[in-house]
Length: 428
Image 1 (cartoon, one colour):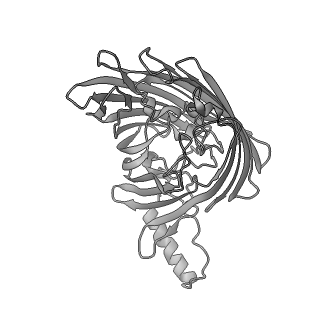
Image 2 (cartoon, helix red, strand yellow):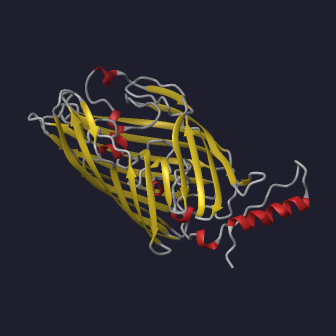
Image 3 (cartoon, helix red, strand yellow):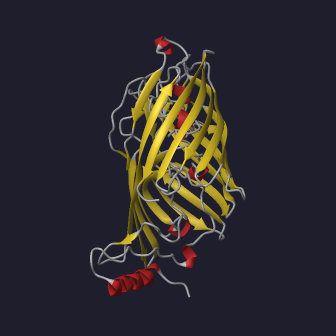
C-alpha cells in the first residue's frame, strides 16, 4: 500500500523517541514520499540550483528521500533550510556596464564608455538562502518555498551596486495549484546551463514575477500548465509610460522521463502605452519557447532552447528592462517588436569531481527605423568553464566568457571576461 507522508512522519517520530530524547540524538533518517508523488525525471543539476524552486506535478521533490529535511517538533510538517555562499572574482578585458553578471547588451558600442578599458570586481551577491516547507494535507501534498539572494542592488550602467537582500521566490502550492512569486511558466529553468556567470546565455527566457499556476497531470510523463502572471509593458515612448490592462497568460506542455525533458511554452501579452495627457494605444504580444535537456549514459548532458515572438523582450534575459517589448511610432501607434534567439550548452564530466560546460547563444531583434540609433539589434554569448567539486558542498571554478553586441547604428563591440568562483553549499 502507498504510505502517506503523515504516516511516515509519525512512524519516524515514534522511532526517534524510542531511541533517544536527548539533544545529541542521531539525525532523523531520510524519508521517502508516497509512490504517487515520485517521478523518474531528475533535472540536470547545476551549481546555481535553478532546479529546486520549480513547482512540479503533485509537488514532487527532486530528491524523493527528502535529504536535509527535518520534522518541526509537535507538527506533521517538514522543513529544510538550504542555500550557499558564493564569491565571484571577475576581470573584464573591455568595458561592459554590468559588473555582477555578463549581460552582452550592456557592452557599449559608442560614446565615452567604450574608452573605460579593463575592469576588475569581486562580489558575493549570488549568495542565497532558501527555506522549503512540506507536509501532507487532505487536499494533497503542500509546499511553501522562500528564497533570497544579495542582488537587491546590482551593478549596472557602470554604477557599482551594493549587497542588498533580494527576493527570488515566495510561493505556496497545494497539490497542483500554486500562487506567489517565482519563475514564469514561459521559461524553462531545467534547461539552463551550468555556468559560473549568474546571467547565463542572453537568449534564454528568465523572469521571476507574481502569479498563479495550475498543472494538469495528463500521464505519468506529460503535463500541461496554465499560469496567470503579473504584467508590465516594457515599452519605449516619447512621453508617458507603459500601462497594463490585462495579465500575461502563459501555457506550457511538458514531457519528461529518466533521460531528460522537452517543454513548449507560449505566452500572450496585452501591451499598453499612456502618454500622460489622455492618448493611449495597445498592441498584442505573443511568443513561443521550446527548450529541453538530454542526459547521456556517461552522465554528460545537453541543454538547449529557442525563443521567438513579438512583444516578449521582458521575458528574455539580456534585454529585459530595456523598453524593447514595443515602441511608439511617429503616428502615436504602439508597435510590438520581434525577438528571436537560441542557445545550447553541453556539460562533460571529466571525473566524479571535475566537470566542464560550454555554451553558445545568439539573440536578435527586428528593429524599426524610428528607434534610437543605440537600440539593441543582436548579441552573441559564448562561455566555457572548469568546475572542481572536491567534496559535496564545495565548488571551485574558472570560466571564460566572450560576448558581442550590435546596435541599430551598425556599431559593434565585444568583451572577454575571466571569472573565478568559490561556492560553499549549506546542504548537499
